[in-house]
Amino acid sequence: MAAQSGARPKLTAAQVRPYILWLLVAVAVLASMSGLAVYFLATHQVIALDKDWSALLPEGTQIPFLVDLWTHTASYAFGIVGAAVVAVFVFRKRLTLAPPA
Image (cartoon, rainbow, N blue to C red; front, side, top):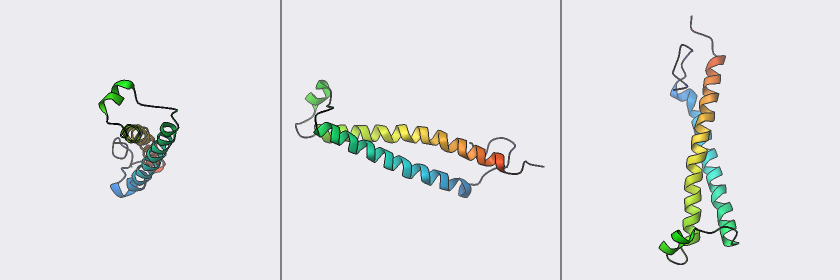
């Protein structure tokens, strides 16, 4: 929408692709770092699952579940925030292009 809406010159998919690729890489890195941080914190017993969740999971699967939960949630959070940032960058790029005659 940021690449096509309004009277300003439109950006093609090829022009927007680098922004999207950077977003995908950033989301993957940040979600992985989140998972590693949660794994470290959970193995050092700084954080743990709620007792209700722990009761539903077999012993030995709680830390992997917690890591997966946080990694998955982080990827959505970083993706949503990153998409807003990409939209701003794309719109600002359109502002630098020559206005339509």
